[in-house]
Structures are given as C-alpha cells and as structure tokens.
Length: 323
Image (cartoon, rainbow, N blue to C red; front, side, top):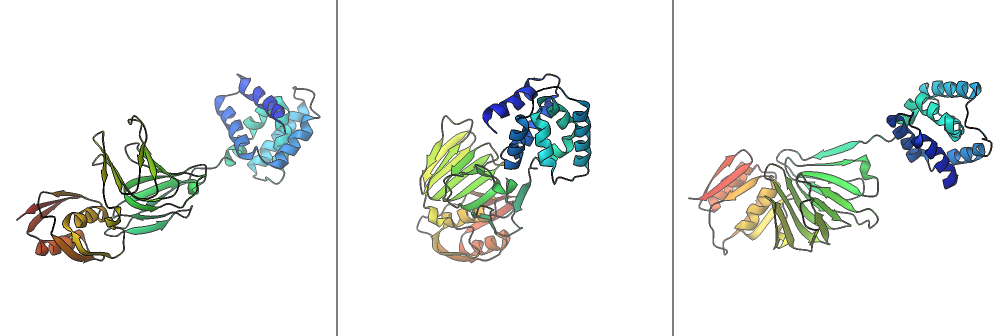
C-alpha cells in the first residue's frame, strides 16, 4: 500500500468533523499497531483497486454489523482481512471503528510497569530485560515499562543503585530521577542516587561517559570516569573522586586499611540513609572491617569500639559525633 492510499484513508477520517476524537485516536492506534502487517496491506491494495464510491450500501452496513459481532466473540482468524476491506472504503471507516471499537482497543499494547524492590537490610541484584545488571540498596526501587522495548531503554530510580549497562548504541539507556533529572548512557558503569526527601540527585561514574539533563539546566552535563555529579537545592556540583572505592553493592563488603570517609560513604549507600558526620578524624586514620548482612545498628556498635564516636539514629538519618 503506497503513501497516497494511506493518505486517502487518513484524510477522510481526520478531516471529518462528525467523527469523535476518541474514535480518531483508536483508528490511529489500530494503524500504529497493524500498519506494517503485510496481510492487511495486501487486502487494502486489492480492495482499493475495486472501490469507486464513498457511499455505503445496505450490504456494506450489514457486513460491518456482522464484523462487529465477530469482534465481540473474539474470533480474529480472518478479522484482519475483513477490517482491511472495510477500512479501504473511506465512508466505511467510521462505522468500522464505531462498531468494532472493542477489537481496535484490544490490539493496542497495554503499558505494563515492572518495579524491582530491594529487601530490607539487604542489597539486591537484578538483571534487566536488556541484559543490564543493577544492584539496589536497602529500600530502593527501580521501575520500567513494556520490558524496556522501544527506541530508548528507560528506567526510573527511587533510592540508590549501581548500574552495569549493556552496550547498545541504537537504544540509549535512560535513568529518570525524582527531580526530573535524566541520565543518558550507551553502555557504562555508574552509581546513582535519586532521593526525593533529601532533594538530591547524584551520579558517580566508574566507566564510560554519561550525559545528564534537567529542564532547569542551561545545557547537558557531560561526565567522565571518576566524576561525581551532585544536584541539590538547584545547585550543580562536579567533583573528582576515586570511583573504585564505592563498593557498597558487594555482597560481603571488605575494607582493608580504608579511610573513615570511604567507609561511611559506602555505609550511607548500602543502607540508603543520610549520614551527618560531625566527628573529625585525621586523614591518616585507617580501618579494616568486614560487613556481611549486618544491620546498621550492629555495624555502628563495632565502629563505636574502633573510633572515639557516639551516634544516634533518627529514622533514616544517622548522626555521628566525637565523644
């Protein structure tokens, strides 16, 4: 079916003020789903060559009513061809979609959303439909629609996640944040935070490159490995870090002569909480520690024995002071 044939059908539908807007949308959706179906195109091509009039006969109307009944009985074996034959008669198109609306709607894909949620006091690993891998910190979630099919692989993050994105240059991977920030990659490894309560978006890039955008930005922000991007209170900050030290997602977290700041950074991410550090430590202070499924209270009891600190836990906020 050439473009002129399609245009002839669409012009009649969309220029007719007597056809309700919702039926026009259903007509459009039907062609969106089935427009590349060769059986439909062949039937339309055949019938277009026979059609010489826009007027409906009584037989046309009775045929459309029979089609409507077949639709309701959900017998689609040869409905495609019947629909194509009826649609090619431009005046028949309206009655087809008025009578066969149920079938048209049944052929439009339903958006299905999948939400992944990390277990309490645990880091959860998931494999996405495109082959990418993610690790979610405690209480964090990730959502995506339609098995990530389409031109873009888009997910929405709530909390913190570590991503290993499978490379696919023709299908960019998009991460949506709570504050309308979006991160776009082709294939890379990074850590991301989307915290609505703290008004915080954060990205730490380990490998590859990413582009971050937001309606409030003057332009996109490009990141390179070991960049740390922070967006909070409408302020953008870019700093340099050692991305290899962010290992909170590992099942057993082992610190061997690690700095105090590195340890608490990983604890904040692993337990998805804000840590307010009022205590001061010399940069030469190093600790060795293993965390394997322990609660944050158990970890802090151990830290209290290794460091001269006191701590209090208020909901999802941990406050640390010097003794």
